[in-house]
Amino acid sequence: MTADTASVVVPLVTPVNSAGEVSTACLSALIGTLAGRVDGYITGLSTGEGWKLTESQWVALTESAVAHAGRVPVYAGILRPTTDEVCRLARLAPGLGVKGVVVTQPFGIHVDAHDAIRHFASIYEDCGLPIILYHEDALAKTLLDSDVLAEVIQRADIAAIKDSSGSGGAYPWRRLPPIRRLQGNETLLHTDPADGAIVGLANLEPALIRQTLTSKPRAAEGIAAAVARYQLLAPNWYQHLKEELHRRRVITSADSLATSPSPDPRVSNI
Image (tube, rainbow, N blue to C red; front, side, top):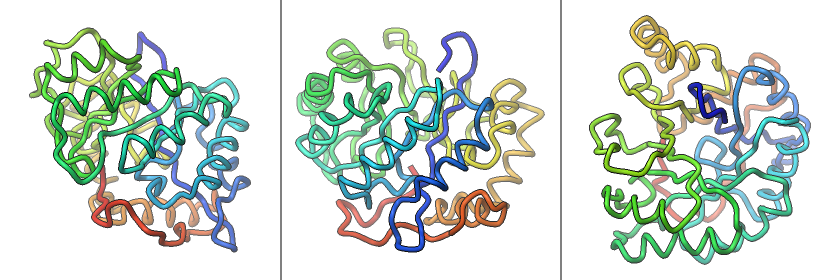
């Protein structure tokens, strides 16, 4: 991600092959369509069905993304419900060549300030990599207030914030130490003065995302049309992204990863 321009970072879908496993060939093809048009890639977030990935699938997906991304940074998303489970994968991340990890708070429970700070500090201590903090309350049930977030930034190397809180510019971001904030909701891109975007639509329309960040009023209609066309407000928005990528012959199958025991079956578009 560049520090002086709006960043477009792609939370990659996870292509699967006929056996239902991660298709590294299709991932390579997808990254090929995005090369030169985006500033970074993230594997295994909600758009990538990260809560379904087994450890071996998570490793294969991450290694493949790094291998095909060239000089563009790759961050490993880790969607696991507890600090210990996140740390287990985070410890593997340095050996996979990623720039950092992307993590939210523990799932499904209200977390107090002390536990939130300990969570992110523990992850950083275990992997030693920069963290993109995933600020949301669909999986994690508690948004961080500005004082807690400021303390997290002091205790861990927070490279940026993926802001999926829905608050946009209304949150008191100016109370924090300088930090890059990337909007995680397509529908807020044309109004939010964020430093960039991490949105599922970037798998299909990276140029539109960049246009929206640089010329917000003129891009509002295009974003609204794309959100409707690809059904990005549906609970299974990632499936609709895959269907379009399959229609474009970028990936060979529109199938999703096999359902596995989920840490939170209510996973939604975060």
